[in-house]
Structure formats: structure tokens, C-alpha cells
Length: 306
Image (cartoon, rainbow, N blue to C red; front, side, top):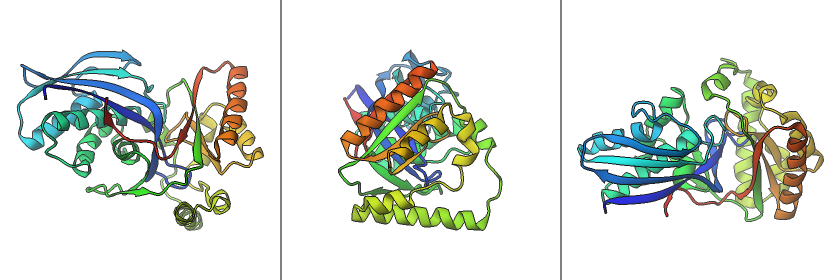
């Protein structure tokens, strides 16, 4: 194999109670990445369409991730990469993660798949660290594995795929502005009250149990963010308005994806999801804020060949 084209999806991270450890891929939204062998050494970005990203090989997440993979395998083969960038950087839906995952996945396939997914994750994370030195693995793991994942952020990045009820859907609204992850993390407190930590742990445990038992009533009751949302809410356009609309319609939860500005709500059933999407679309349209919006299942696939 001399070349390959892959699709690497966008993703929602944090998922209310799962700061840095819970995420899921978004169906049909992501980067298209074309990779081919080169006669020259090194990883080069030959073309980028869509949203602008760095093409410097030391600043591009796809290049940094791919180089880490090749260095580990001790392979001198060069590669050229073209990216159709469909995820705006600073969107809160895993823009940098999608490029990093697509690069390591595609090159691994060209090389005959010498590494498993769990090994690829740590190389994709090298690209994530370019965008934020404290980057967690929830977006990368979501894009790589697909579905709803739980990941620890220690060196081995253990990933657990969680069961998802068929009727559990997400409505995602993405204002077309940029919020840098590093800036968003800077507003978070350095320490937290032990009572809040206890509530967050109860929320996480209850949510995972509700997934296994398909108990939407428990999910709605327990799924809350006690640690992060309150500090980031004011910097996310229309978050308070969208959350008010969502709560009035008895959604399962409504919160901020990653560092923002994207907002997501979890809903039981397509009819409710579509109704919520249309109402929130109108709210954004009236504000003159440009945006994209999506409905996605939480069992969407991860990175794949196209």
C-alpha cells in the first residue's frame, strides 16, 4: 500500500461528570486525510483545505504524531499528508485530536498495521500536546475507538468502551469562534472542595450504571458537572440560554464540550433531539452568531478508511 484516505471524527469530551476522561465521537463530522509515501524523508503537509491549521511539521498535530510513530518503529520512510480540515480549531469538539488520530491510523495501515489501537493512542497524544501541554486523552480516544469511551490519562491510556442505549442521542451546537484549550484551562481552580469531588464521583458512577441498565430516569437525575462548567459557562456564547431551553424540555443533561465553545445536550429519542436542535438553532440565528449543529448517536464509529 502506497497511499490511503481516512476519515477521523470530531468528538465531544468531558460529558458533564467526566472531566478529561469521558468522550464520544460525532457521527459524520470530521477530517478527511490523504496520506501517501514520499521519496524524501520526513512528514510533510502538502495541502490543507477548509479551516486553517499550522503546516509547520513541528506545530502540526498530524506531523508530530506521525513522526513519533515512525521514530518508535525506526522507519525512515517519508510521507506526504493532505488534510481537508472540517473541524474548526478551538471548537471544543476535538479538532487537533482528529488530525493526530487520522495521521497515525493511516500511516500504521500503510505499514501493514504493525501496531494495535492502544499503541497508536500514545503517539496521537504527542500531537495533542502541541496544542496543550496538559491535554487529556478523551478526544483522541473517542476519535480512535469511536462510541462512548472512558479513558485514564496515565502513561498507558487504558480505554474502556461503554455500552450506549440505542435511543441515547446528542444534540451538538458549535459556535464558529475559537476558544483555546490553554486559556480555558487557566480559569479552572487549582484545588477543589472535597464535597464537590464526592458529588462528581457519585455522578460518574451513577451515569455508568445507568448506561448498563438503560435507566434514563437515573441518567437524568445523576448526570451533572460539579467541577468545571460553572467556571467556563460565561465564556461560551449563549450557553446559559441554551441550557435554559434544554432544562425546560427535560433533557438528560446539557453542558460544554471540552473547553468550549461547543455545547451538547443528551436526549432520549430522535423526535426530542430534533425538536431541541430546531429551537436552539433559532436562538443562535437570532443572535447573529454563525454556528453548526448536529444530531449524533453515541455509538458512532471511530477513525476509518474511506
